[in-house]
Length: 203
Image (tube, rainbow, N blue to C red; front, side, top):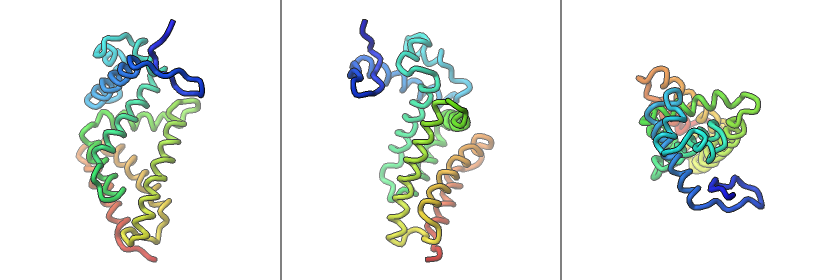
């Protein structure tokens, strides 16, 4: 009996069936909409399944577990954030645009914060996911800051590596504070740090 579940990798993994790819994409789009408006606590697997005409088990057939589905939703959230940052003049402006975009989808911010909190748990799939995500993100930001430093557009008294870590920490911290107090403008908070990075520093 054949399956339309997309292959997950490996040298001999079968090529995913078009029907399975399309169905998985439909589930992801639906999950993204549900989480964006309802957050991780109100959004249920059953609600997502009902919207796409499947059972809970049918949905997980395409992802393996609830956690893998949630991480796939975060990937989709990241892509939407990158789209919102298109046209930014540098990676620092792109970060501020991304944070501003995320303020329009509070439920996805809730999901992101919840999954990062779960990541340190032994054996949790969010652990390796976020380890890789943070490594890739810091590397991209560091490279962008190094270019800005070479062009005289960013302070040089602090290493690009440390500045990248500070930015990532600031974004995560601002998101958590914003969930607790929605009156906080987290884009403004992150923008203030960006201003400090682009202010003259010791050479």
